[in-house]
Length: 260
Image 1 (cartoon, rainbow, N blue to C red):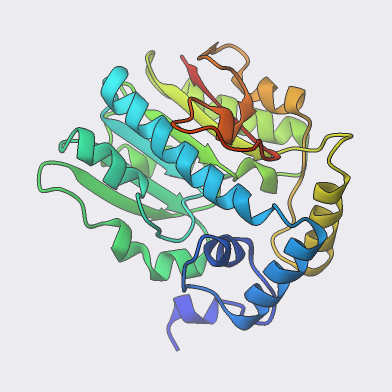
Image 2 (tube, one colour):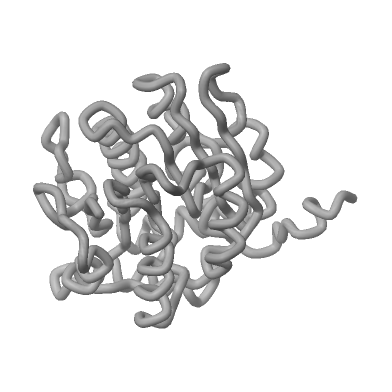
């Protein structure tokens, strides 16, 4: 058994693998599918969050590459490879785009080679690190990205795993402070709301049975991650409502894009 394989726990459901199951992927185990189905019973629409979040990623990356001229992307909390990963969307617009993926999930690491097949003109790299390891991430990313030039920091569905509010805000600030003017923050986060009791129940079930545990925040608390940045229209909204190509129902995953 390799070191990576020894780190993969198939006895408990895992967020990345359930997300993969909900989006139609095959990189999951029976325990993940069982938990995913139980969560979907509590909140039938929750499987749509994963799809809406993925579509938001594509729209945001495409916008930044086409309209803002961004050619560098630091994607932390990458998740399992899927259709239209960050480098695929970015390099479709700009073949010379550079992307660094960061995740600490051993299953993601085992599949990382699928994330490293980019265009000859561009570059992709993968770093096995935790979001909290800010200095490590920045030092390693600097080997592929030029941090003196604008970078898009992608934090989709990852700060939810930092339970302490102030710690999570400080991590995002430290990352953005290290990036050049013209950089952008792309962030999504599951939310809690008085009208979404079924979402809260699903999250409570997850935190009792799954790993890692996640933290919900209010839409206002999610907006705070963009403090000090120029928040692009339409602001912090349901990720399905961020510059959609078609009208789809709102989901309890909120997102925004901010410019430094």
